[in-house]
Length: 353
Image 1 (cartoon, rainbow, N blue to C red):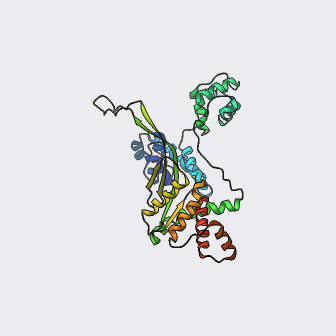
Image 2: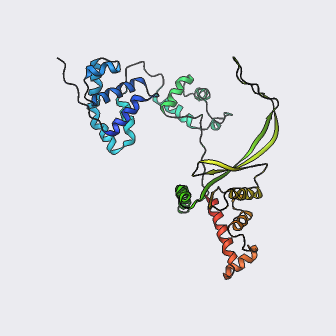
Image 3: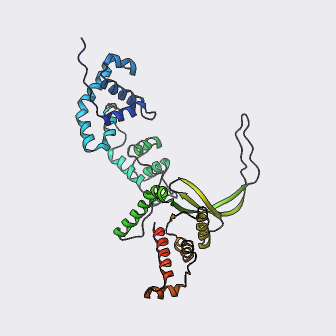
């Protein structure tokens, strides 16, 4: 007479993770199979009914039900105190237990040294490369005497287990602002500008636009036309090309609509080019309000841009001269000084973004 099956209890969060595992196309088949066992057991189905649905026998189904029941308290503790580890805890629970096998070929110290080598720059080893490849890492590990020999496949397993990808890199930027309080204010201003963009567009019709330049784009033309694809042959492109120099793209990204518009393409990115780009952009909807988010390039906070913004804001007001504006500001007598000051401050703040 068969015994009673282990009672299975799961929370909503655990159920969501199990359902994701059971339908995943990237997880292992065994993990999806065992996740389905737990979900069916939670529906109070018997082991003999679950077994044909997952391709196992009744006893194997009972093993995974028992393992889940015994570990449920620990899983719930993860969910309450560190939910980020819950997914990995469930994956580990439903994975095969470690099995005895051949002794490891490399010691823990050797593996640690290989991983430390992968974290170093190839330049420190005198290698004329910018990023490690697995073959180069193997050769360097042997040259340093860390191991006698190691294959790229074996080394790749060490890298994957440590989640190291020395062949890849990501760009990052160090801020020039040394005051953390000021830097936090600048970051908050930029983030709030992005967050408020949809509401401003809905209520005021304000366009929030992120602008940046892509310089040095090669303008090339193929020396001969492409040949179209045919049965048994792919399309062919002429290898040789004619180079027409380089060009600069100044692009506008509408934060709310999520699309590019009114781009400028030209040979340079001078102060005059950027001012003309702003004028062209504003002309696409001259009655609307505009917010431009730019980086700290000097052309983004130039005197010509200040004058352009001032002209767009109050075209009938005399801007005045730079020296006269300074003297009038000291005595607070000229209405056009405030216009210059406001326009200058607006450009500066956006440039800091």
